[in-house]
Amino acid sequence: MTTPSAYQGSWMTAYLGDTETTPEQRADLLSVAAEVQRRWPGEDDEDERREVLSGAAQVILGRRVAEQFAAEWRHAHALAEEARLRMAGAVLVTARSTSEHEIARRTGLARDTIRKALGKG
Image 1 (tube, helix red, strand yellow):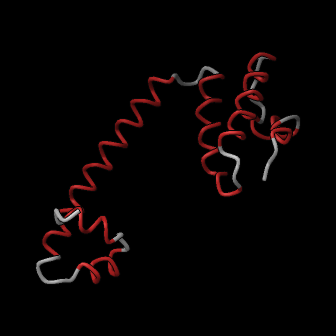
Image 2 (image 1 turned 90 degrees about the horizontal axis):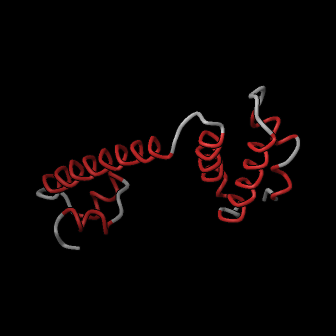
């Protein structure tokens, strides 16, 4: 597991590359990195830490604002909901001739997900 101290010195240089920063921006990045490490401490949380820190760094460095990330998230959420509904339709049709167990095996969907799509859960 990475410790907050790993977010200092060489980490900062490696993360920012040749990006020009002020001392205040570097201090903000170190502070956020330590908070991110506290909130996502697990070894398997590395992807989450990287994405959270990326968003924070972009705001700290003035490249993007929170509203842009919120719009991006809303769009992704809408796409996910559309995909879920299409999946439900596919499951409804497939279930006419295929067991829930077989649908789960073939699609990798959880049985609970299939049952919800069929109005059973």
